[in-house]
Length: 181
Ligand code: IMP
Ligand code: MG
Image (cartoon, rainbow, N blue to C red; front, side, top):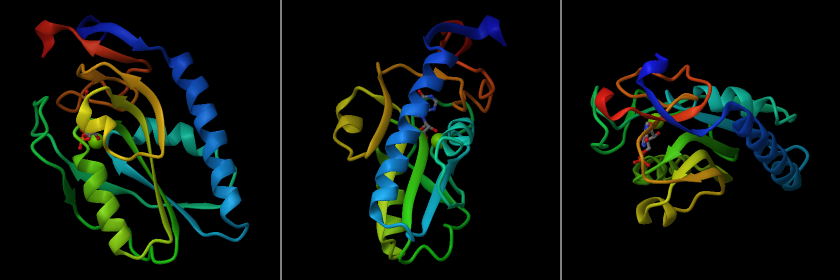
C-alpha cells in the first residue's frame, strides 16, 4: 500500500492531538445545552469510520450513535457526482440534539443534504463536525460548526478517506502518487 502513497499531509500524531481538542470542545458545547439533553451522533459512512471511532472516545457523555450512508462518488472517481442518501435516515430524531460527523467537506453537497434531512425530522439542534475541509469557496462557504484541519484542494486518502474504497486503513492523511490515480 505504501508505494501508492505520496506526501503525508497530516501525521497520525497530529490528527490524534486535534481529535482530542475537538472532543473537548464538542463535549463542553453539548454539556452546556442541558444535563438531560438527548444527544445522537450520526456518523456518515463510510469515510468517517476511523475519525468517529476516535472522536466518540473523547466525548464522555451519554450519547446514541446512529449511522447514515451517503454516496457521492462512482467507484474510481475523484469528482463528486452529487450526494445521495443510501437507505434510510436514523429514525426518531425529533427533539434530539444531533452531531453529524463526516470525513471531509468538499463541495458541501453532503452537509447540505443531511442538514436539511435531519432538520426536517424535527431535531432540536444540528451540528456538523468534519475532520478536513478543503480551502475552496464551496467548502469555506458551507456552514460547519467543527473543523479539524483546513487543507489544500488536493485529493487525499487515509484515516478513513478512500480512493476506489482503498487506503482507508492508512493511519495518516496523505496524497496519492500521481501514477496511482
Ligand atoms: P462533498 O459532498 O462534496 O462536500 O464531499 C464530501 C464527501 O466526498 C466526503 O464525505 C468524502 O467521502 C468525499 N471526498 C471529498 N474529497 C475527498 C478526498 O480528497 N478524498 C477522499 N474522499 C473525498
Ligand atoms: Mg464520505
